[in-house]
Amino acid sequence: MAEARFQPRVFSGIQPSGNLTLGNYLGALRRFAEMQVSHETLYCIVDLHAITVWQDPAKLRNATRELAAAYIASGIDPEKSILFAQSAVPGHAQLAWVFNCVARIGWMYRMSQFKDKAGKNAENSSLGLLAYPALMAADILLYHATHVPVGEDQKQHIELTRDIAMKFNHDYGTDFFPITEPVIEGVATRVMSLRDGTKKMSKSDPSDMSRINLTDDADAIAAKIRKARTDAEPLPETYAGLAGRPEARNLVSIYAALAGETPDQVVAAFAGRAFSDFKPALADLAVAHLSPISARMGELMADPAEIDRLLAAGAERANAIATPIVARTYEIVGLAGR
Ligand code: ATP
Ligand code: LTN
Image (cartoon, rainbow, N blue to C red; front, side, top):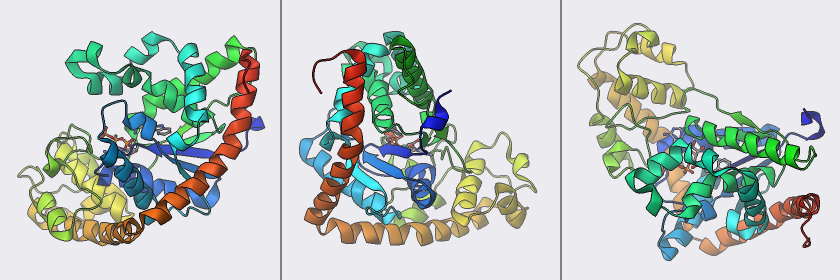
């Protein structure tokens, strides 16, 4: 494999579709901030992905700024990381078209995110929703990114990115694109809904009680955790003792991720106690983590022009990496434009 040719470079993206959740924070944002210390990092607001389902234009613009604020409030330093909006760098759409022609339709129909989002009426979903993973592959490969930190739900899309890179390299007899690695680490790679421990906590869940939003205030966080579904059993001695109790496991995992402990340490500390004792401690911990983030987001959102300026500077840096990669791709494929 040509891996050694590629310097380590981290890329990830989040959709500006409103309501960032504790799942986005633990599965993505917090880890993005950690990785910027040791790596060259690019973090993107994937607004082209957001419009695969209809978005109100004014709300989309606002959600883009709000996501930029969330990135920064979660510790991403826009001087160090390259922070930008996908639509501000034309290479994403340019490379996505090439990948639309490399990827096979059958690969797209197999994606579980497509099946979930398209639902029963798949024929009536946008063509963009089906092609979504080819755009995601373009996001990553446009920068020759070698590592992509994501939550568990994105693993299948990263595998598809690898398949697209391999097929492109094979079809054109080159080793131009790297075979990217997913980085899915930690105890909170799949935070579950507070109402149903078998469903992912999601910003698009119709029930607001199912998730903790980054912008929830202390009272809302405490109320949502108090009302979170659990069972009547006390906490066992070990985390393994929570088998078959998905809601209980989820709350313990969230606690562990926030406290920086292992799930076993958390269970041991509360062994034999009821969830009614555990929940207030979890609520305190969540509030202690999230309230500085939402306060900082509020401050940043008070100056939208400054956010726009930061994003424009990020787009310029991203474009400088992307432009020669698009040009070389076009040349490899035999396209006339540069
Ligand atoms: P939706 O919930 O509407 O499907 P999403 O939150 O999954 O949207 P994004 O906002 O694009 O979609 O996700 C951004 C990142 O957050 C991805 O890396 C994703 O894996 C991660 N993520 C999302 N939800 C969770 C969760 N419940 N647990 C852990 N990571 C998550
Ligand atoms: N598909 C992802 C968002 C996303 C992404 C990316 C993540 C778009 N492009 C590139 C990592 C790398 C999602 O729905 N969470």
